[in-house]
Length: 349
Image (cartoon, rainbow, N blue to C red; front, top):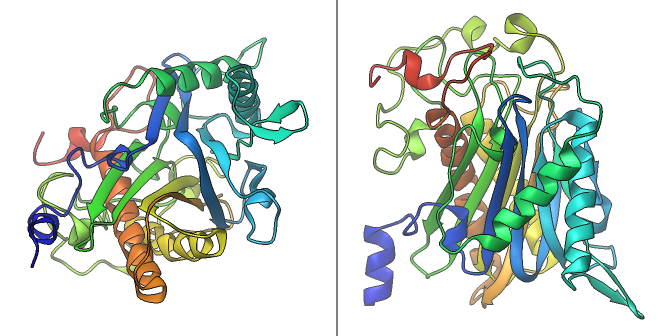
């Protein structure tokens, strides 16, 4: 076993345990505490391959059709996750405008057209002030992109930031989460997620996370799996019971430094949906807009395409589950919250 392979086994997460452990990816966040909402931008140092899989019944998206393997666009400039429901789609327009000014985008003759797919979550009834006269998401998109451009290190904040600023689950605050994984082959996988589901990320009424079997170290508390069996009635509790219908959606991005085609990236996005199902109960409901983008920076050639894509897809699902739990674990309280934070109800607090 080589030194690199042994290091990957001994330390399976990347150095920061963030999606930015993949070289060439940057994350920028912008949020408004009064609004209780925000925007997150994933930016590449250069355009990257991307695909998407949508399993929720109520998605809100922009330019996701371009990510189908049979579409002409081969790479995108950025991905945007935003709160604000349909209003939040304005953030992607602001990011595209700013990227064009920076000389980024798909070249069409003398024109450049940045390709910026995006997805939104519903956080309009979370206790924030939504009585705006001008849509705030255009400015938040610009701020999040500027933060991504300014990022000097791989670190960025998790919890109640960016698109996760005002996110909620059925019983607790949601948030922004991330995690990474280094395979024995040296391939790195990362996940970034805005967690705002109709279901729960914790088991029943306790503090244990559904994602506990996949936890690395104590990245979200180290409590382990729930011990007792959970009655069906406890697994089906949602915002339909706790808050109000419609306040939902989990938006995930999984990324790898492996060199994937759009078709292979699509399979990774499909596999990564398992990460949502393992970390949220119930998931992929008619009132959630659950989706997963898959990103490839193309730095690491595949040695065995079939086996490598299988392992990358599984690793992406594991990373996404962990990132979902970390989002809730890192959430912080704020005035006007409609649900408590995990830290306020956990035995670790």
